[in-house]
Image (cartoon, rainbow, N blue to C red; front, side, top):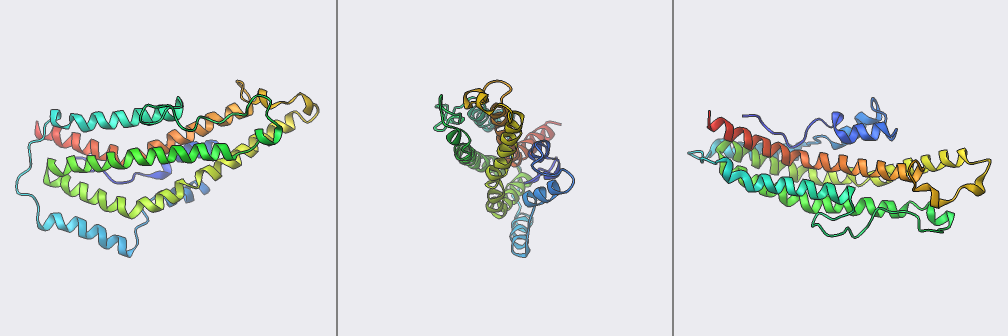
Length: 258
């Protein structure tokens, strides 16, 4: 059986690659530091928690593995797909994970907006944070359900579920703190694109209007696409632990048929 880890290598994660592509982190230097913040920061107390979770299953392992079938696992697999797809659509199409129209649509300057209102970053910060909350509220219960299924599947998968729960408890707060810094990191990109745009129109500033910024090729249209790309990368990294558990479950079932 392939073992699933609560976190994968963040240096090679989609999120780090996206941020490096946007020049918000240095792939070789700052990128590594950022990845370390998303990595397994396990202190002495945390290590005790993990060791206790690990040894509990070694001392009192379940006597007989259950014969879990693909059919019995189908509901949780479908739930994973539904949550992933709905969260993706919430980011790319402006709908919440419940299927309803998102409470905060992708921001854009209103027609005739003043320059000061049009360059305000706060609406984009609120948009980003709203989707982060949406991701958190949907993925956390999904991961819990996945652990519950694993706990019923076999002694080894039950141990893996307990280890995942321990890691989740240890790392969730630290991970949230790091991810919550991303809206401010993206503000740098927002200001950079705005400055580049202004320099390109320095000889004819009167011809530059906010109405043109969101059109195809406009700097604000470009930023909006980048913002969504970062959110999709965040979603990917937040789904990795649950995906790892599901893959471990699939491998266990396949092995039982061999």
